[in-house]
Every structure is written in structure tokens, then in C-alpha cells.
Picture: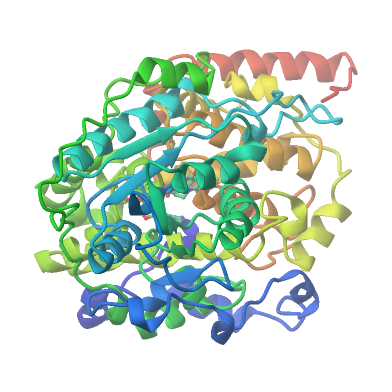
Length: 576
Ligand SMILES: Cc1cc2nc3c(=O)[nH]c(=O)nc-3n(C[C@H](O)[C@H](O)[C@H](O)COP(=O)(O)OP(=O)(O)OC[C@H]3O[C@@H](n4cnc5c(N)ncnc54)[C@H](O)[C@@H]3O)c2cc1C
């Protein structure tokens, strides 16, 4: 990636995995006073590190770092007494981290269950579809994907992952409850009632951490006050980041160059081996729960949009992820061995791990991948680059979304310099103008863009380098920056398996509104936002080879070029 490129400066650093990139050193020296202005800081949420309430010391065992946890029920730090309850247990409320291996939230819940000698249970609340599907914005921009029913592509991947977990939990004697809240407003209440019922009454509940708006509403706004009232502690554990988001930094970071040293300082403390998940081994004569569900019924509940189909080769779950990872690490041709040099070439897709859907759905922990890739002690430059992407870049995305809770998906989330510059150029004349529906079909004058869009729509993925070019052209060819942002987010979240994730909001934000970037030479439409063009892509890789893989990409470009030329000749102005 342009914003991720850089080689380890020494092999020691390479194995350590976290480095300052050459391009960032250059960027630092180029910065002028205006660009590093403090003006934007007023929007940034800041959480002083000392104000984070962790789980109390009395509950912490040697193999769990308490700073991975955050107490969401501030006035209720300790589990309830089991004596006073019928059917006491400890619950893990699984949301983002859908796996039984290498899951710090599940491990902490297990430890609480063992300490209290009560059964461990896991609950998953399926995400309720919105009461009404969102419609187009007033400016004709696409609907907000977060307010639409899930696509079949995402829904089946999610349900398949849950089926894998159901079996794994069953073999560890852990009951798994999949529940269906009646609405988005009722998620916290449904989880609370479920965890405090007469048949399984929680001493304590542990949940994982997603910085996205809806899961935060469910945990922090809806569930925490109810658990607090019931004297049940709700502990949140960041099981997704290696360095917990609230420890990595207490504020929104400017970019990788400011987050990297902070992560680097504590990386060794957090990138530790995982204890084993033993489930309900501590319960004598524990029955094996079936954990069987009518998955078709659950699919109906999700009310999936079948216009965006699942791709059967996308096998969900931890095992499938690890198989891909092994292939990436051991490939004699492409993969880890040339990850540092070839990952920006879309004609070599298998140089990248292609694991982002599994990571984002929580089927695999990046901490596991980091531990394993380092243990190989092979390909130091590839290892360094892989860890840079999977740790610094990925955790930077969580940092941005966590501390920009209200605005991470709108232009308000941009730094002042970027927003002001985009506003100044919002009405600049566009040489090409397309509606989102034209773009969706991959029918522009640009064969490379069309090919990228067709890859996204039909394969549910888009090569990391092309993603940047693709999103920047959406800014260039649509009617306004806010329309562009909505369009790129819509495509990314509806079609990409790895969409609906902080990485997506930051990737699109970087491309269109300069998130984590600096100001560049001012130009029409883009203002000071970094520009990319076709010629630049031609210099990087064989564009025609990539285009030829996508039937229709070149033909659509010929037709669109003709259409645009005819419109120009006839003096007709395009309206978006
Ligand atoms: C416009 C745009 C949209 C994007 N949308 C998404 C998205 O919806 N979901 C998503 O996961 N990533 C997104 N990215 C980031 C990046 O392109 C993908 O993470 C990467 O291409 C995934 O492929 P991979 O698993 O083969 O990654 P690899 O190259 O093998 O990298 C290993 C892991 O590092 C992480 N990673 C790699 N690059 C980045 C990055 N730039 N930022 C943050 N983490 C990174 C991912 O978890 C990835 O799986 C987007 C980037 C852009 C520019």
C-alpha cells in the first residue's frame, strides 16, 4: 500500500517487526506548521490512560493482563455471590471475536468461571436487521449500508463461522446460545435478560470490543446500565488488537508514525502466548451440550439481501483461516517470501495473505498470526512488512474509529486541513461525472477502474493497492466529496467480505478525506488530498494483464468513452 510501504531498516528491526518507514521519515520533514495545526484536536476524544477502569486485581490470574479488560459497569466491579443464585454461571457475550482459539475475552470469562467453580456459557446475539431499509441520501448518494439488511455474502459467512464455534464449544462442554433480539434498540436488553434468567444466571459477563457504532451502542449504552442495575459486572476485553485499543493510545493518533512507537514500546508485553481454552473441564460430570440450531431459521431472521451472493469457496472458521495462512507462509513462489516487494502488484494476488475477512469476523486472531510468523524465523523483510500491516495499520484503524465514534464515516472525521480543502473544491468541474449506479456496474471510461469494481462485485475482494486508486477515482468522478465517501463506503461494505470494519472506514477515509495522510500539492477536485492516476499504476504493474482478467472491463471503457465524447460534442452536461 502507498501508505504502508516501507522496508525494515535492519534485520533486527525486521524480526521485531515494527519499524519507521522511509517514506514516513520523509513525510515528517516535509510537514509544515499549518498541516500539523492543533485546530482539529477539538474533535478528538481523549481518554486519559489512568481513567480506564480495569477488572479488579483479585480476579486476575498470572496469564491474563488486566489492562486488556475494561469494566463497563463502573460501580459493579466484582462478580455476584454464587450462593444467592439458582443456576449460577459466567457468560461470554461474543460479538466481534467469533472463535474459541486465542480469544482473550473467552479466556477471561473461562478464568472467572473456574475461580467461582460455575459453568461457562457463551451467548451470541445475531445482529437485528434495521426496522426499515435505508434509502438514498438527499443528494442521490447510496444508502448507508449500516442501515440496510445484511447481504447474503456476509450473512452466510457469519452463520457458517457461528456453526464452527457452536461445534467447538460443544466439544469443550460449553453451551452456546444464539439469540435473536427483536430490534436494534433491544439488543442490550435481550442479552441482559438472557444472562440473568432463572435457568442460567450470570455472576459476571464478559464481552469483546468493537469500536463500531452499533456494537458500542449495544454494549456501552444499552447493556451496561442494565447489568449495573442488576449488580452484574460487565467486563469488556479487547480480544481483537494485540495492544488493547485503550492502552495503545489515549487519543486519536495523527497517523502510523505517531502510533507505531507507542505500540512498539509495549508490544512484547502484549504479544504473548495464549493459555489453552479448556472450556468446562473444571465442572465435574459436565454434560456435552448439543449447541444445535435451525440455521435456516436464523438465516430467515437476518432477512438477507440475496442480490449479493455468497461465494461457496469462502469457507468460514479458524481452521480455514489457518490453512490459508500456512499456504501464505510456506509458498515457494508467492506469499511471505516476497510480501515486502510484491504485495502492491495486483497481478500477484497470492503474495498477500488474503485473510482480512477471517481476521475481521474474528475467526482468527492476528496475535496468533504474528506469533506464528515470527516463530518461523524466515523471510525477515516479509515478516516485518506483514506485522507492520497487521499490527500498526490495523490497530491504527481501531484507534481512529474508537476515538472518532460519531464521525468516523463522515467528512466530519477528516482533519481540518482536509475538510476545508475538500469544501473549497467541492464544486470544481469534474471531467467525468458518474452516478453511483453507473459506477456499481463498472461502466466508466477507465478499464482499470472497471476491472477493480468487477473484482469487488463478483469476487467479494479488491486488491489492497487497487483499493486506493479505486476509491480516489470515486472522489474524482462524483458530484461531491460527501457523495464520493458514501459511494465508496457503500461498495466496500456491501460487496467486500472484509467490509463493515474499521479498516474499511479508514482505507476509504484515507483515500477520499486524507485520514492519517498529509496535505499534498493542491489540484482541482482533490484539493490537497493525495492524487493517484492511471499512469502511476502503469508504472507499478502490468495494468492490461489485470484488466484482461475481468470480462467486460475493457469493453465497458470503450463504450463509456464514446458516450462521454458524444455528450461533450452535443454540449450536453452530465448530471449526477
Ligand atoms: C479504499 C480502501 C478500502 C479498504 N477497505 C478495507 C476493508 O473493508 N477491510 C479491511 O480489512 N481492510 C480494508 N482496507 C485495507 C487493506 O486494503 C486490506 O486490509 C488488505 O488489502 C487485506 O488484504 P490481505 O488480507 O491480503 O492483507 P495483507 O496484505 O496480507 O495484510 C495482512 C493484514 O494486515 C491488515 N492490513 C493490511 N493493510 C492494511 C491497511 N492498509 N490498513 C489496515 N489494516 C491493514 C489486514 O488485517 C490484513 O489482513 C482498505 C484499504 C483501502 C485503501
